[in-house]
Image (cartoon, rainbow, N blue to C red; front, side, top):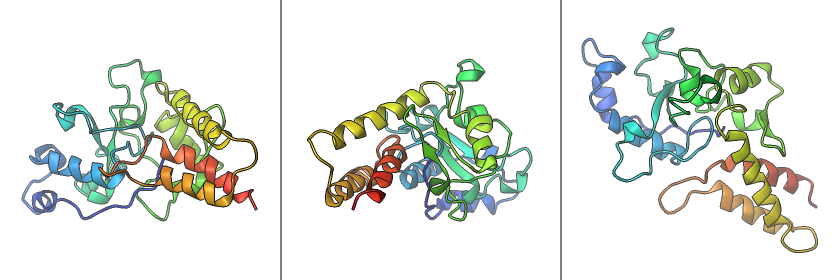
Amino acid sequence: MKNITKNTEPRSLAQHRCSRHSDYSNYDHKDDLRHSLLQEQGFICCFCMRRIGVREGIALGDQMKVAHWHSQTRHPDEDLDYANLLGACKGGEGMPPEQQHCDTFQGNRDLAFNPANPVHDVESKIRYLADGTMESDDPQLDRDINCVLNLNRGYRLKESRKAVISAVIHKVSMRPGPRTRCELHALIDNWGGRDANGHFKEFCRVALYYLQRKLARTR
């Protein structure tokens, strides 16, 4: 899970919210919202960090979901609140429930932590183990990870995170001797930055967690 910096909401969403009897279901310009969410998130899922929204010729609505951090059922007043809206992957939609994840698995349950709320700072509270497990010492965040979003049992998520960790370890260990701080900073910049299309790398926070810990131990 990666911290998200929210941009200005789409004009069509603000206008719709000011109209009579407006709600998410009758908002007719959802692609405006999807584009905005994708751009601020770097085209990765707000929860699992899989790539979303880049397949040409396929409607955005078929590639992603708009997740409500506070559920629409319990918090109808936040239905159109841009701060409450996130871009999520399809989350194993159609698969058995134990393999679903992210918004698909969440359903109408609320989350304790919002990756788009800077006060929550989810990046500082999550660690990634060598086997790809994602966990937190905060019991509420750990519940979000395992019970609400299913980020450790969802389809191939652990395996994907493990593969990223293995690739980074291989990169760091390609030559004998320890990496310098300058070299580690370069790897961190590479994994933490966007490409020319504004995309973050898939599972970028997994690599950054490992690299930043290594940097902290390097003199």
